[in-house]
Length: 302
Image 1 (cartoon, helix red, strand yellow):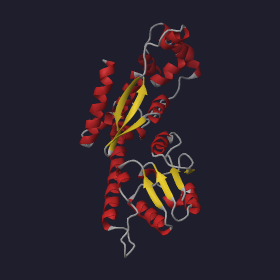
Image 2 (tube, rainbow, N blue to C red):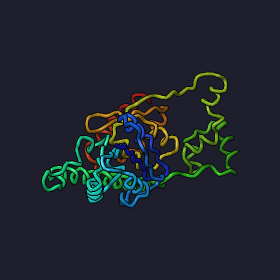
Image 3 (cartoon, one colour):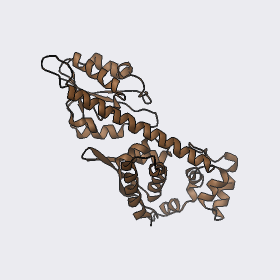
Image 4 (cartoon, rainbow, N blue to C red):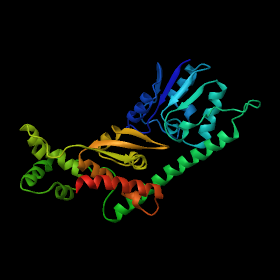
């Protein structure tokens, strides 16, 4: 009886770190891993994805498919039921190790008809619909946030790097006392781009060169899962994406928190990205989650 592990990420900017952590904690023996190429769209039906099709070809009756959470494999309700039908036909079990579906036996069938139990089908449809609603709300909030930013004269997406012919001007201005924020506004780039340009002039670089401790040390903060889910779909700087991907998942009942290790400045930047969760269109649980994270971040900044 083989243990078949399936992993997938939606974009080539994401990593499987969180999935790896959940699956490692599950203690799966002798896993046979099938991982889709980065960026395999969630809109593509699971049965049409290359690696999942390869997994089904490899599987034998009695094998078990392991996934970190249901939405790594499926998105819509129809996809869930299609996959369950195929797995039942091939006598392959499905084990989900995190999220709302982790406490359910999705393979339960009526002993006489062999059909999916009506209670299981109802729960699958309900939870899948709730997942679709959450993703739709996140997209709407992101769109509303971008519109609000545009109304203030800001453009969405990642800003460009400092042009080569402006590098010397930026460095000179920084040495003369111009702040990173002001330079970013002057040149229409992100603060990260300015920091990259003047990296060897920053206090922490100088302190490290002299063997002295850096002025800003990383701190560990717990980010509510609803905030983490929102940020994973947002446009982030590479450093912000890295600390998010490296976060440690701490399960909390049906939800989770993500333990993030980063300098206070990065925590502050992540907090600013989830500003749309304060909008009146956000669900109460999302607003509460953002307030919790804001309180934790502000405790270190103030």
